[in-house]
Length: 198
Ligand code: URA
Image 1: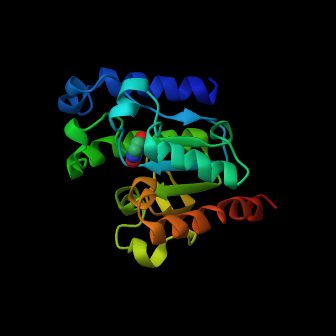
Image 2: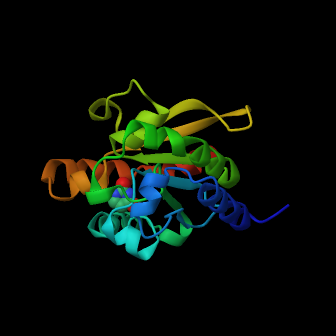
Image 3: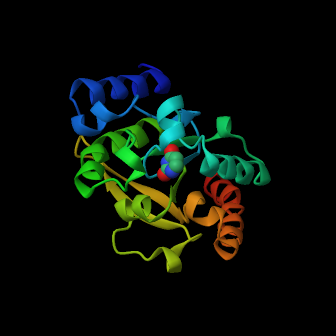
């Protein structure tokens, strides 16, 4: 069996070869597949790469990423302890919101990526990412709470995940109240993971 890292690389190759969202791909510098430990207990899922991510080929490396790194450190973690990715793996031009059909096109690949990593907890960052797992949830009501949700994989099998929706670091960065809410929610995540492991 190939390592988890090799399997994710293989998945990245498939996205390129199958020309998923060719329109986005043609305007982006590169595919931004993910960063961190492909064997992690926690996976963070954002929306789509921005300018810095597109240039460096890694998710969350701009201002929102610095804030994410700070919160990871405050929670006693490092980027190398977790896995970070996005729903959409190419930068939408001008940092526009990804279209629903773009998110839909990447969904089977994200589901497969999660199947490879098999984390204990999935943390969604922002409304777009949350809506994929919990389409009827309201982020203002559900943020920081763990929700069990069955997710179907590309091969027809399914798995029940523990989803923790958080606000997006970019939205919370310059909004004092939201910023503190996100930090408070974030600090609860390690305890959730420990409770599942024990
Ligand atoms: N915002 C996201 O949702 N993802 C990134 O990778 C960077 C900023």
